[in-house]
Length: 162
Image (cartoon, rainbow, N blue to C red; front, side, top):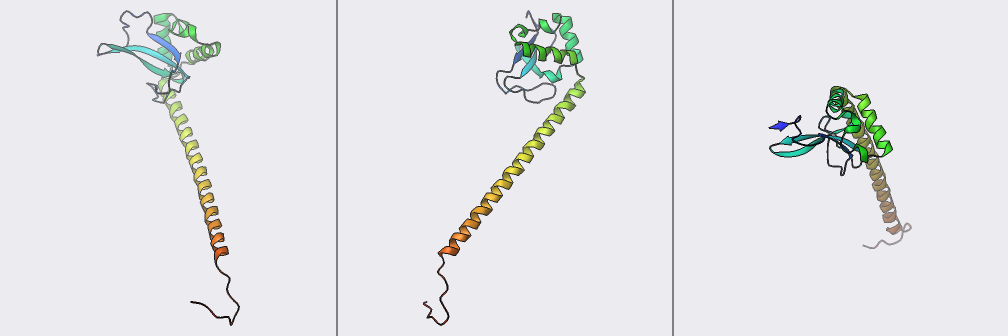
């Protein structure tokens, strides 16, 4: 049994805070929420145990914003709002003013993930090129060392030892 709407005696069903670790992920777009990045939590109870389901601010939808206004009077009524810095408050209020469409939020997250994957691939290719060049230089140096170590050929007519 999942209960999103009843807070079961809680003063505030919502929470905003900087992520304590980088282990949480957005329930909408599934992207990780980095340590220190603002996250918005909705309290839910699952089989008698309460917890928060977090969203990145990019995934705060117009419907969620409307629910916050209805239940706690607006974004400044969300739990944890008072502990935010001025910059964090501005970021949080901006997310609520934007109130994105869930499909747009998922598309934006997918585009960001794709961009990050492309950057990682490019970095890996550059690293592979460096490693290949280094191996080639090492092989060339080794070949040069072997050539110096070989005895020089003797003049014609000199006896050859076996």
